Amino acid sequence: MKIDRAWTVLTLAIWVAGCGGGSTPAGDDAARAAGAFLGELRAGKVEPAWDATSREFKSLMGLDALRDLVKKNPALRGEAEFAEALPSAGGLTECVFRGSNAKPRGKPAPVSVRVTLSPGAGGWAVERLAVE
Image 1 (cartoon, helix red, strand yellow):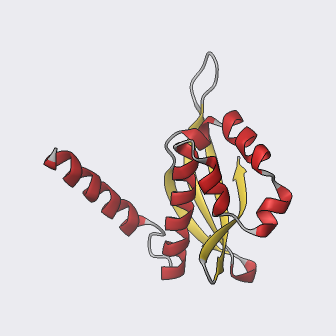
Image 2: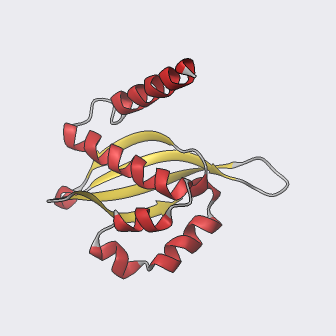
């Protein structure tokens, strides 16, 4: 039990330390927020994930549309590895994760999951979500 917990803590520490690979502290914070958002989706907790989105996101994609997107994209339900945090215009940060979509009768197809976040008084909010 102690080994499992130590392994989990070590894995989380390595993941957090590796987020952004030399990016700014803001990029690291955005990466953690994006990872938490995807973790909620992966755990089937769509409503808590929804709460971490901006008004713009909510106006473009309703809660039911987010549920449908998660159902249709195995990459949002499976493990996704953090790749990079990219600063963009307007103070936004795009966090890129690598995952895969299961293909019937074939090998999983690699995909990128892009979570764009904006900083705010309450922390980072998800502005956009794309599976490519």
